[in-house]
Figure 1 (tube, rainbow, N blue to C red):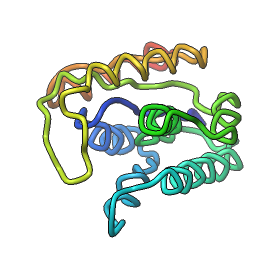
Figure 2: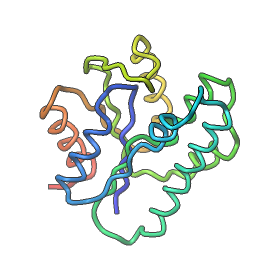
Figure 3: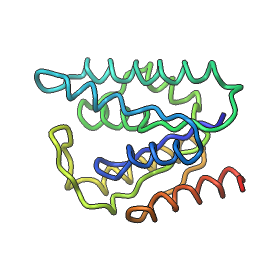
Figure 4: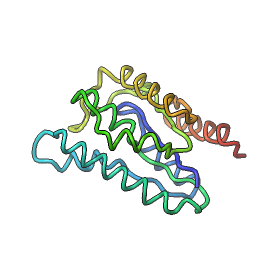
Length: 174
C-alpha cells in the first residue's frame, strides 16, 4: 500500500483532490479530522485541542500501518506536517510526541497543493492572505522528511490530472 498525504494551505482543494484520487484508484481516503473537530467546538480552539487532533492523526496512521500489506493507495486529506506548523505558528512550540511521529517517515509521497486557487472563506479558515507563506513552510517541512513530493497546480480537472501524473511519475506507475 502506498500512503499519500495531500497537504497545502487552506482553500487549495485538498479534500476534493483526495476524494477524486481515491475514486480514480478505487481506494480509500482519510478525511481531514481537524476540520470536523474545530467545526464542533463551542469556542476558539486551544493548544489542547490541537493535541487531540494530532493524537487522532497518529491513531489513523497507526491503524493504516497495520494494513501495510494491502495493495493500492490510501490518500490522507492533510497530515501531521500541517499540525506541526500550526503548533509552531500559533503557540511557538511543538509537542515531542508529534515530532517523534513525523520522524517515523510514515508517508510514501506528498502532494503539496499550490495556493493558485481562489480563496474561499469559511468559518474554519483563518489565513487567506498568508497562503504563500504557509505553502513555503510546508514545502520546507516536507523536504526535511526526505520523502518525495509533487507540487500540484492548476484549476479543475487539470489540477486532478497534474496530481495523477505526479503520482504516476514519482511512483513509477503506468
